[in-house]
Every structure is written in C-alpha cells, then in structure tokens.
Length: 68
Image (cartoon, rainbow, N blue to C red; front, side):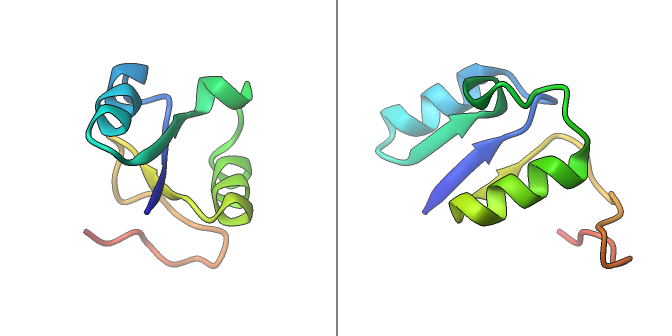
C-alpha cells in the first residue's frame, strides 16, 4: 500500500512507515504542503496513495465526509 502523509503530520511519520517497509511520502517531498486539500486528494488519487492526516471530518469535493 502507498501512503501520502499530509502536512498536519511530521515527515517523520513517512520516514517511520518507510523504515517499516511501506511506500510512504510526505507532501513536502512533492512541494504541495501548502496546497488546498482538494489538490492533495487529487494528487494522492493519481499516485494511488492513501492520505494520512491528523485532521478529520473534512469535506471532500463530492460533498461526503471522511469517515474513520
């Protein structure tokens, strides 16, 4: 599984996941740390990555809420 760690979390989260054998990148690696959520979600979709964030209950473009 591939992960994209949002700027709400430290790059150390991505590093730790990589050390555990996962394919994880932090948004800073792509220079999109200041991008709107919609840009980050679109990027993650194109890269087939799951977004990991400390934020929750955020609205998606489809109008649905993220559920955990």
